[in-house]
Length: 121
Image (cartoon, rainbow, N blue to C red; front, top):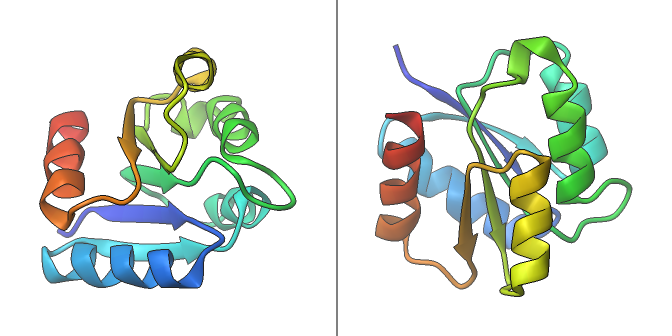
């Protein structure tokens, strides 16, 4: 059975790139436009992994991570931050909140696939 990945990204072009890449490699992809939309989608969805942007309207990536980790069903689901940010303080905040990995934009599809394989074991 295909693993399901929730992609939370406010940029439609990045969402589409991730969705097409992940689908091509056999993953089922559900898209959300920001952290709030992501949390709503998780109410009716079982996912194996979450990929989220950091800076988004309504609810940012850190807020999303806190919301996900507060839900017992998703406490241990891997979360990958995909962002242009590269500051150590922000990385530390994300990891402290519960992020599993960090990928900096722009990214190569092979890079994101490698990180997904690592965090999903």
